[in-house]
Image (cartoon, rainbow, N blue to C red; front, side, top):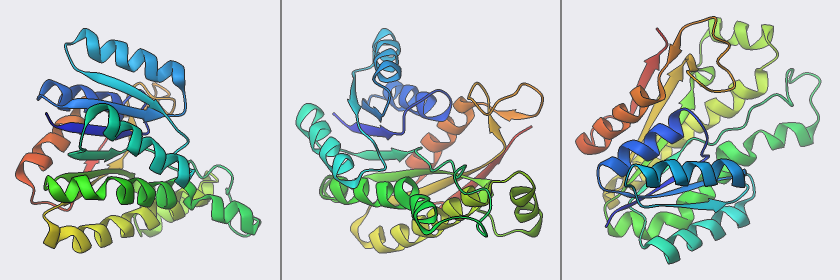
Length: 232
């Protein structure tokens, strides 16, 4: 039976991805920091007839991240798909001109360090099964003058830097793993996901299920490196 690891579990995209892939026959391992959210997630998935298990870890800690992948492998078997929704909020760095070196380094703890750690840990399984790595990213990472102006205005410069670095990392992983038959893809989210903490109810949103169904489409076709989804 195939297994998907949903790293950075919470409401919105990750919950929808877990449900979609579970409905398609995958076992689901959900990973995050909140034991309560994970427990509720497992209960919801199991109520839909999906085999699911929860694993608590700080995805900004590489050692903990590698350890949780080993726990998933022991409990559920080899990993076929890795879905990464975890991100660095960037709130600690509203302005790079006043940020400390420690604050700047922290931007990459999750977006780069955590993602690389989880890929490294799951890689033997992904190669053996010709699996896939699905990475959720944000439009803040686009190299665009209008986006840059908005990030400066709202004190989110750190988020832009972290997302841009992750955007580049996805391309590198895709090229590096192409010969091994591991499919890597990224969905860039341009807007707010409905039902999350960022949803104020006053602007256009994207349904988590829309993202999840797009991931399934990408996974089954195994062609496109990147797709952008915009709020409407």
